[in-house]
Image (cartoon, rainbow, N blue to C red; front, top):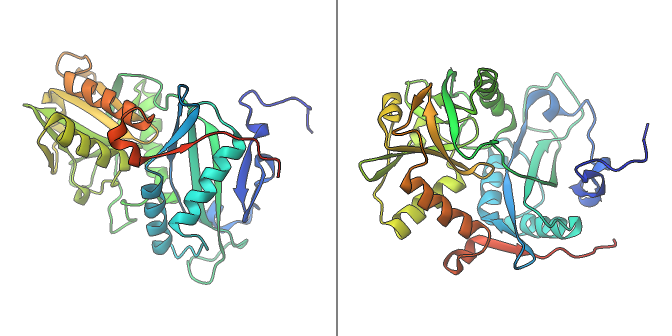
Length: 321
């Protein structure tokens, strides 16, 4: 029963893109028979829109790259959606304008097997669909300096489920690790792969600073090729002149590092100051992490003209139909 009251987060006023049209978010619903609900047969993206008060616009960061990755996932799961990268970008801009956000937002596109049937363990000959929502979004990890633990759960291997894509079902792996960490009083989990090498956080890539060089786990270690990861690699090389090395990282290297930080669309760049109750260096945010963090934030909110090509600026407007 409706109470006639607005939801505290204002989502009752939002629209979604659902089944090819813009509808109230409250109407964007699927059946309990939906294939993706039972079997995780979907791919998604997490995209940040960062509010710039001075310019009165939301800056969506690296929108095209996110949808390029989404469509790669669609190919893998045989998700036949009738949209190109350009189409998906236009749909996103339109929805952000319709929702008239004036704060940071999270944009969630989802392509999924929409067929309403169960007991069907295949991908072919099943209907697919695409939906898109935008919601207000703040500090994802809840802290500006993280206390992490090494998870007892291992990262899935590529020959189990491809880890280089954001496949819905694979995220149970991350959820188990994050739940274990937070129930033990930590902020985040660090997950190792099947070989015992450092893989990533539950939803972030990982970087290590040691002797003035920047290291990050190689994609061959079942790491998601993060768009924020790629951003940090590029600005570390271009703006700070750092040597960036992609290779396998041992767990003990984290304990002995000068700095450690996590990166992701939701997490931005967040330093790790403690792992398994051991301080990383002096237990404070390091200088390289701090410099990269400032550079990154200026870029994603559209304050750095050199990197405006990575941003899609969207001004809220009133849409009546």
